[in-house]
Image 1 (cartoon, rainbow, N blue to C red):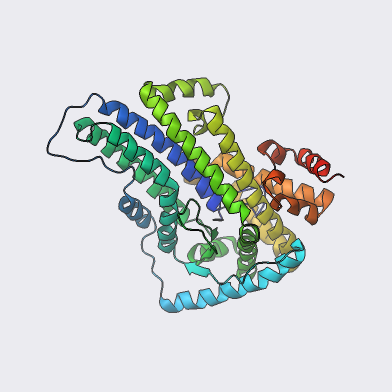
Image 2 (tube, rainbow, N blue to C red):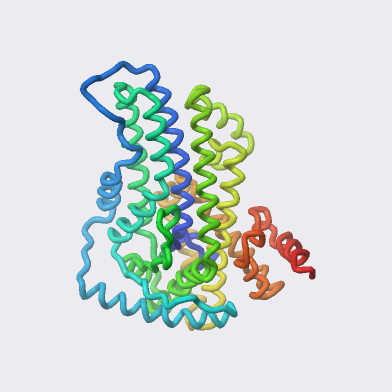
Length: 414
């Protein structure tokens, strides 16, 4: 789940798995709109006896081929994997006691699930997690189509168009991130089986390219990334309730989408979304949020707050420890910050269209939040965010750390 890209107020900001997750949730919301559109068209359909069953919402082989084409001409050898797996496993082993000492806590296990991957390896691994993310929407689509006439011509046409568009969107998203992600702690969300241990991925081709482009020390930069991803492992594996809480928010959110689409289908389908967009337009929210009900938006903000803290805490750890361990820390920080400010036009357009610009800003705020709390109250007080769900800050508290500090002080009887 954390993926590095060139974003944030300093070198520590990332668009991690949570950035990918945020974009995925946004695309899933759009997919629900697409289902409303296709199903509203199907009500006027004529029968076509020669065809059966609607297409699925997403063709995952098209997703894979699209993302792979964007990351073509790259191959790695078994010797390459063996070398870098050993190298990064040693970095993670080095990072664990350093994080334990700084955070005044301990890891529940040895992090023995380090995997160094190529870009297409990363795409394939994340298609699995995206399938899980989209399954509630796929189920919603299947149920909606079953209630309609499954042999309708326009239903098949509109469903096929919807599948093509959404499959292309997801493929391009994963293909784009596959060229930019540096590291990822991957903890499966919405999976049917409980996850005992997450995997720590390092996309070495992207890491090496970044090192060459920025002209920084390779060993220091790789340690910096390892600190960030190992901190994510600490967040989730030392506090199992966090994953359960994450899942509960996602399940509630998709449940609201399911209920909402059922109501909208009875009351005009896509027209209901267009009316909502007009009503939300005055609020100045991002384009994805404009199709949400107030209840959906409240859960979306709760999800954003949690992702902001997950990212902000890891960035704080990476910078606080990195500044003491790395002689060239300030150089890395400066050049990553400069890289962030000078994104290409394509990068800026992609980030804006996927709604990731808002998410990156919230990760920046998450880092400021943790930095502020640690500065004022110390790391032990900041660690209360991992105690239980009631200690998690709201999105407004992320923006105003003192509000969270005051609330927690009252809870602690201070």
